[in-house]
Length: 116
Image 1 (cartoon, rainbow, N blue to C red):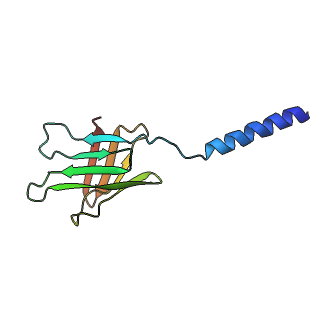
Image 2 (image 1 turned 180 degrees about the vertical axis):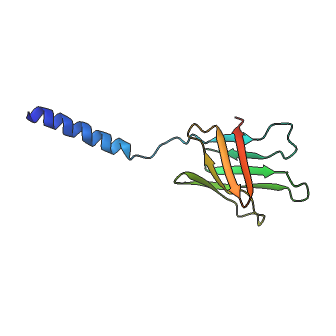
Image 3 (image 1 turned 180 degrees about the horizontal axis):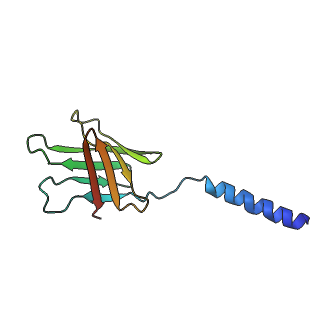
């Protein structure tokens, strides 16, 4: 009886410790964008070193081309670029598999597919 209880306690402790450990790998690391024929040329690259690049040429008069650092907060990836005052889609949600990136800024909804 004591042996079973000890084994059960050990298994429970091991499960508890692994259940709350942070994931070492983010599934959203990669490049997301629109199809190659789309003139907007929207592209988001999330790099494993904590940096990103983002471009959005949907408005030819106000092209957006920024880079900076990203931070994962709960279920959202927040892009931070100190070099731009131009508003851009800076909060992104990703599907669990990391195949789609979604963002909303005002009434503009973006959905980018994983390219690489």
